[in-house]
Image (cartoon, rainbow, N blue to C red; front, side, top):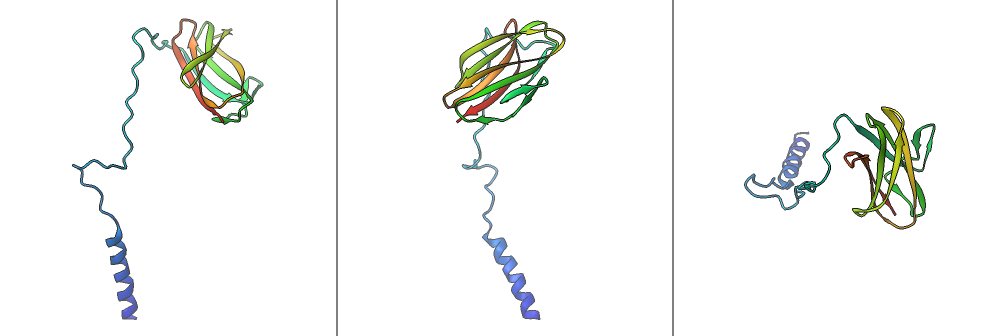
Length: 150
């Protein structure tokens, strides 16, 4: 019995010795992710709108004023619907569709009240990284959604 206990204790000691020591705080960890520096908006970019916001989602359709088939990835050839619930905007908003960072299409959509849902859609035949930014009529960003076409 005592020898079994000694074996168990020695295996614990071996397991602890096998762990690599964490790098010293003064040395950079080569496996650590690199910090991401946010891009500064262009100097002529509109400032965010005060008191106006949009919840934005991407999916395969809209039913009863809500998005359905919500996802972050869609197969090529899918008609992607971008739905937004706009709060506090008046007149109209824009859905600015961007593929790989470049504007591909813009939809101007009417807003009928302080709480309004609206949508736009595109059939996307080719793979790429997409983002749809919701903007006020004067171009101030109020919400965004990103998705991938594979």
